[in-house]
Image (cartoon, rainbow, N blue to C red):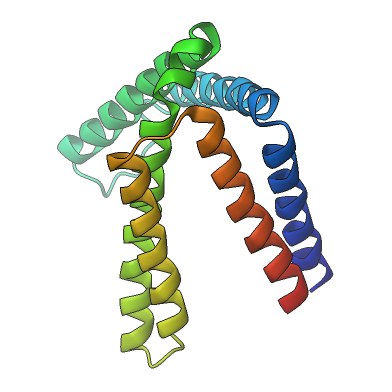
Amino acid sequence: MLLNILKSLLIAIAGVFLLLFPSESLQTVLFYLGIAMVCYGVFTIIAFFISRGKEPAEQSEKSKNQGKIISLVLGILVLVCGVVVLTKTELVIQFFPRLASIFILTVGVACIAKALSTRRENGNWLNLLAIAVATVILGGIILFRPFDELTIVRILGTVMLYLGAGAAVAS
């Protein structure tokens, strides 16, 4: 419970920073995201070469090769994207509203699926569905009525502050 409260407070604090310092926060987030992407890509590529021939024998040869190739391609794509984020930060910032809207829409659709799944399990699904629909609407608004990148950062900061503070109080 204490860990949940701490995580919620960290989310709320991050939301405050996004609200108060949107430009600096966006550049900082992109910097660390770029580093994480480069590390993930490099480690995935290294793992591809290290794991060659170490898969379990019960998998078919075709299945092994497909998995290896998909892993390698994913690693290369993430590495390239990370390098672009690090070297072309201003370009990424220009596309940030579109990227954020696509991310928000994806999260909203995933939450709708989770809510419907919870409904089948007789869980408390209406609250989750309402939040998911609101998330999809927010993503749609940002996608079809684009705001500047700093406004998007402030919107994300507001949402993080609200969710973090709400989760901390609920814990």
